[in-house]
Image 1 (cartoon, one colour):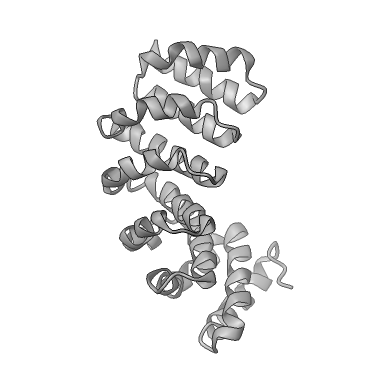
Image 2 (cartoon, rainbow, N blue to C red):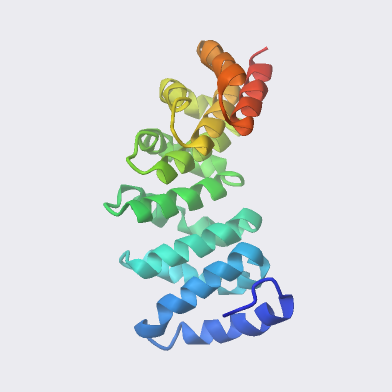
Length: 219
């Protein structure tokens, strides 16, 4: 077990894991899972392995792709440039039958949207459709993507207004939070009444606070 909270242990482990990734299928999955754990706490330590992780994203999707997407997502929160080149391949995974692939792919794209909102404008319609996905993680990630694109390119997301208003009723808290922010960035006056209801009645502090922020943007 790698002590992911100890920097020295991580620095020793990552080069060894990089070597293990070249040793065959039987050890690849546990190695990728270890990298994901490290990337969550020490994303900087895993940046040098980004090219190897990207290779798993570019291959035929499988369990290894899942782990690679997760690791790249953690890295991209701090270093989005490392995964910019994967946008096209990851976008294709939004149509995957496996909900885990859709969740990890949409999560990575949501992380990349902070820095690459312009590049993600073409997939706004696809992200809007994912607001109704059967998987709640996908819903949350899609709403995050739309909020981040709307922050700098509201014109590209205006068509998602009605779907975002419906997302204010989502069961998952993060989806409601993201929808509030997106509607604020869109200056969606038609959402005012529903946002006011969330501000006053939602059980989540985060949702109520996001509703307040959105209403402030409308005023």
